[in-house]
Image (cartoon, rainbow, N blue to C red; front, side, top):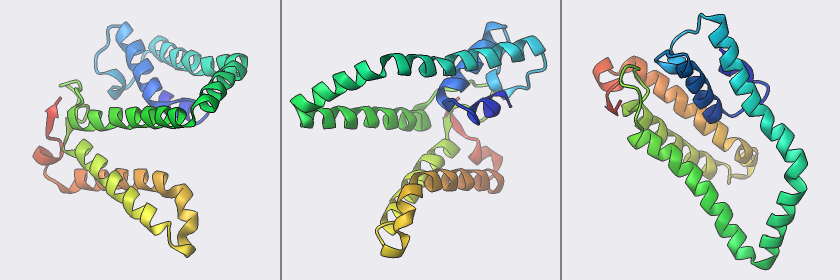
Length: 180
């Protein structure tokens, strides 16, 4: 619940899950965010760790943004191909991290669904297929508006497919994990 509350205001799910898990584990608790937090002190610590980490960009960006933009502008003006390659490399690296987690991510063996398995692979494949279909549909004149919404629709669609399969497939298949 704390993560949901934080993300409705500001935040990043990959950072906040890691921060919350580390804060919980600092108290010697296991299971990370999969378990309910009943101790007010642990909850307050988790909330503060997530909040302070999320506030840092709000402080640092206004101070250093002009300098960062100036450096990026210099690099782009020297060699526009190089800046395109760097942007593409950063994006591919980000996507590769998510793909690797879905295929070979190591999770906590005590938490069902924490490691790579059938459902994470289905989510990956479903989101790719849905994204390709939505991108193709967005090229149609009457569906041009879909271009801006293709990624969120693909993500939501993949989550719905995974939730449906988790209910339909036998538990031994749905929750099969090879890296738990």
